[in-house]
Every structure is written in structure tokens, then in C-alpha cells.
Image 1: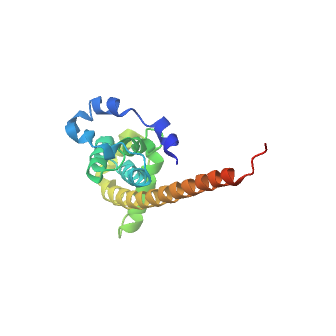
Image 2: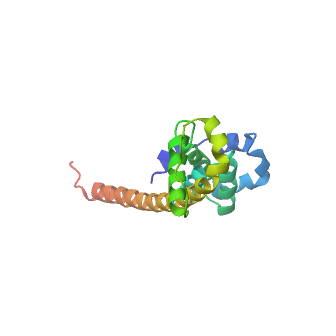
Image 3: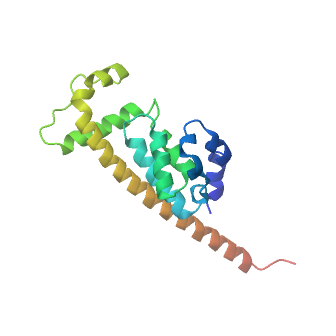
Length: 176
């Protein structure tokens, strides 16, 4: 199973429980389902993390953690996937989300004089917030569904291929 892949990249549960932003969840972090690495928990974590990564808000990690706790899916994977949006990827991702929202909203004017700067973003928020949030929610839902589906398929494929390899190794005549 692809557990070994996730185990090497996920943080230690004890360290995550002690993190200053995670302390607000208290005893909920003791639920063992939040730390399991299985097809259900990891694919659900992909859905949660990818959804919250697309939402333009501060402290996305806390929202992803709260959702992972409520859905009882893998917490470290959910929180780690939020980092898909980082200072380098935020401008193109949020611009794409804005374009999707502008396409969905009737009579939405395209952006004029758009700059990829924080100053422009904060000054233009009054004008762009509706298409940005609508596009972010739509893209987040679609990406969450795709991530969930792809991870379920990948996990199943990986389990089947490992099973076939073990079966072939057992059926292989030993040379003695």
C-alpha cells in the first residue's frame, strides 16, 4: 500500500498536537482516525485539503484541520495539501479562480490593469470578491472531487499491483 509514501512526508502526530494553531482542537486530536493511513482517510484528506487550498482566506490550515476532524479523515495530509497555495502559486491559482467566477456570473466585467501584487489585490478586493469567491468554491469542489477520485483509484491500483507481484513471486519456481 502507498502508506510508506505518506508516512515519510507527514509530520509526527505528537508534534502536530503541540503546534500552537492546533492546540485549539484539544482532545479531538486524540481520535485515531485522524492519523490512520488507509484508502478512505487519505482520499478524504485529499478532498478536504484541495478544497481549502482553493479558498482565498487566511489560516486555511485551521479550516482544513477542523474539516478533517469533522470528517474523520487523515489530518496531516489535509493540512499539508493546503500548502498547494503558497506565495508562489497564489497569484495564478486565484486569477484562474477569478476567471472561472467571472465566467459563471452574468455581466461580470473582465479585470482591467491587473497586477500580481498584494497592493493591487487589496485595493481591488471590493470589485473582484464575488467572482473570486464563487470561482474558488467551484474550483475547490471540482478539485476536491477529482483528488478524492484519483486517490481512491490510485490506492486501489497500487494494492492490486502489489498483490499481483506477491502472487507472481509465490508462483515462481524456486531454483534449488
